Length: 342
Image (tube, rainbow, N blue to C red; front, side):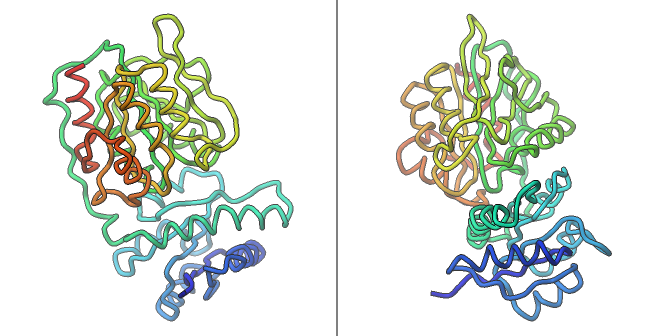
């Protein structure tokens, strides 16, 4: 079986060496070259034709984001970013990167190596399955303005996503008005980045977006993002929906887990819920979405053509959890049209 050919781009030779060791420990991966800057990387892409590239954001002469913006139109290649704690990673994802890992801090070399073997190898393999040539196309949004006001409904909206989800969630949430019922979101993302992601969405969208904290009350126009190291669950407190955020073991391979969130929505909100499962590898969220549908809630799955990775929504569709399968551009409008009937 042919190995995945990976180009590592990082200006730190010590960290690049650790990445090479981590990636090379996987028998399915071959590191074909290491570049210290984007100019070397450009030449090595032409010479080695890698299947996937890992790319540092902060580099001399040209940062990783500018390199992506120049590279992707000419040489579409799946890219996994390696980022320190910075919201620049979201610019990289917008520019066409498939996913990212956070640069480890306060770890020994052995701990870093184990982290890279676990996280980077997995994300490189996922990235290799993505057709990046279609990630950059513009997605027209269906307007939700044609649907009448749905304010003050005792309903919960829940969204789950993984690989490709930062942009997909942005697309959906940008379609929300201030009358959208309280919304909870789980996106697979490292700790620290979820707050920056929430702040970024808050500045871009008409609704209020924040990283969730235990005790937050769901109100119209508020979107709560699960913290990167905690499961988010819906709870009922009298006549109010609230959230609880707690650390815990990985569920369906993740913390936060979409399944944990959806299962709590099914249990607490039941037929007063609308949930959508977006792009992502694996099966997290599929069982929880089925729970919501069985409880009488309405469920939506993103379709294959508009997914970066048609994994989680496919599993959900295959087990009968999806009531409506739709392109990304239609999901916000569908949420509104379903809410109007509740």
